[in-house]
Image: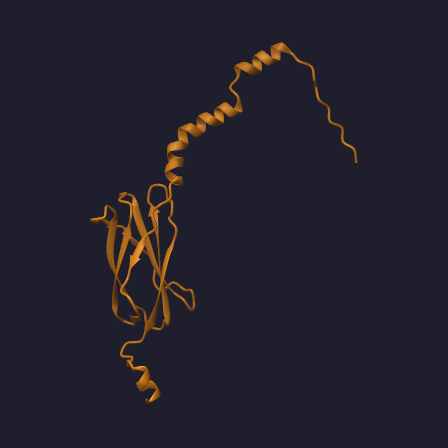
Length: 165
């Protein structure tokens, strides 16, 4: 299959002058980008990843757990979306929480304290959070922390007692 390509080599000075006086597409696109660049620069700057501070060890079903959420940046338009997922079923335990009352802390960032009622019927839960800029809707990377959940009133046996030694 052959194709023929025709190239017109004729040069017309009048046509060249007309073309020279018109702004090129490249010039237009550069000017458009420069006008929008502050917004683009703001969006491309990564948001701080939230830090979750939880009590160590296992969580007990039915008990309330204190969660401290920190952000390294003190930008007023940042909020944190926090949710809890069952690790076995990968279902959301509760609706996501929007932490909007972030207050300045001593390290120059923002923080908020919330409480979580540890659900019954889960063996392990995953707490996840992202920071969201309310102006640009930009999201940070996600942070995840997993905790084992035990039922309330579970007896604590030493290894020796368990094996009868």
